[in-house]
Amino acid sequence: MLKKLATIMIALTLIVIGSALLASGQNVATIVHDIQITENEDDISVTENIKVGTTSVETLAFWIQDGATEMEILIDGNSVTYEQGIDENTYNCNVSGLVISTDSEIQLNYKLDNGTDEFEKTLPYNTTTISVTYNGIDIYSSNNLASGNSFTVALQTATQIKTEYEEKTIYEVPIWYYAILVILIILVALSFVFPSKKSKTQKSTKTKQVKGSESEELLSTKKALLMEVLKDIEKQHRAKKISDDTYNKLKDQYKQDAVETMRQLEDSKSKVK
Image 1 (cartoon, helix red, strand yellow):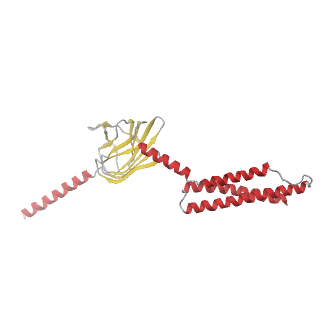
Image 2 (cartoon, rainbow, N blue to C red; image 1 turned 180 degrees about the vertical axis):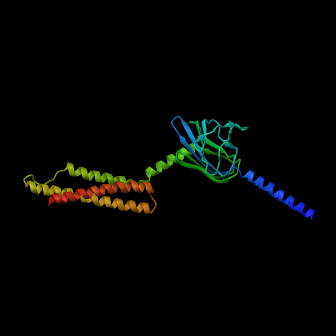
Image 3 (cartoon, rainbow, N blue to C red; image 1 turned 90 degrees about the vertical axis):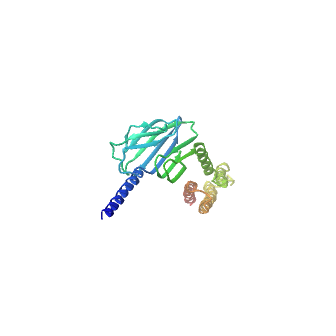
């Protein structure tokens, strides 16, 4: 009986110790780590937003790369003090006087030299999700990383990606769109440069009718061209040959021109009558 009771007590003790060790290992874990890097005229600013999965903790540690200046650590909007750890890139915060929970918002703000080519990060805790953006462009993301994992991202590559994206957006517009626009401008210009070739001896009322008819013909041609452009833009977009942004810009531009042309056409017809 005593032997059986002793065995049960030992088993319970092991369970309690094991649970404690497991809880301590999971006491701090980063659930979401979002890093936003912005290139300014004189420096590079970094903002790290962190959500932790913990119920209580006395110390939080953060890893920040070499050369960081103007460091600030905020917890729920309140600035907290920090001290450098054994590793010169690690900074510890005593948060025993704060209530840290899964709803707490932790933010790191610091600046890097404008000539910094790479962004480095070592994770002090297990991390569920991490993402990095540079000037609004996603340059790194990963899931389920263990404590101690490191990564390095080349910032110059990110700038190149952004430049290529902008150039692609510009050259996405087919050249014939601009050709049609030039033709429309030429048609409108010709209507003003070359007056009616009717004899000057004709009555003024008939001359006005002829001019109105020529103007109506030009406007009708312009309207037809614009409608064809709008149809082709729609076709190009459905075929995914142009992006949503390019499609919306072109559609709005040519639709506005078409509406204005139709209004002028109606005015021209009413004047002829």
